[in-house]
Amino acid sequence: MNKYISIILLLTLLLLPLVIYEDNNSRYEKLSKSLLCPVCQGETLFDSPSEYADDMRSVLKEQIDNGMSDKQIMDYWTARFGERINTNPQNSNYFLILFPIIFGLVFGVLFYKKVSND
Image 1 (tube, helix red, strand yellow):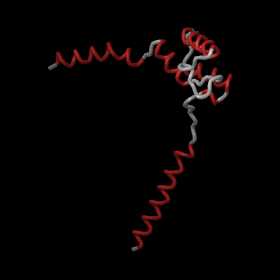
Image 2 (cartoon, helix red, strand yellow; image 1 turned 120 degrees about the vertical axis):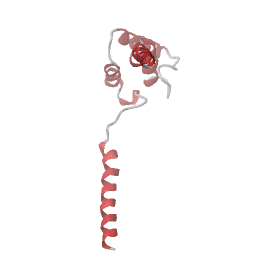
Image 3 (tube, helix red, strand yellow; image 1 turned 45 degrees about the vertical axis):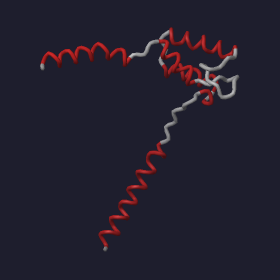
Image 4 (cartoon, helix red, strand yellow; image 1 turned 90 degrees about the vertical axis):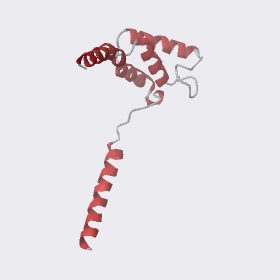
């Protein structure tokens, strides 16, 4: 039994870096599918046939090869073209999280008062 646990642990440790760390090709594909082509309407960099997209793809490959993080790359493109270039922007709107919680608490208090009065 101990032998099987050690084999599973060893396999997990060997395969873990493959899951955690992405190679440059998968990073390129993910990022190029997250950026819209500013010339083509509604197409990502990955799908766009325009020459401008070719230039952008080569810059993106350079950025990945130079070791820039995904956040640095997205910040670069967002600063250059604005939020509209990002296919899935990450807005942190705390109101959308807090409103249902506060509403639920108020409803819970009112419900408790109504039930306890009867």
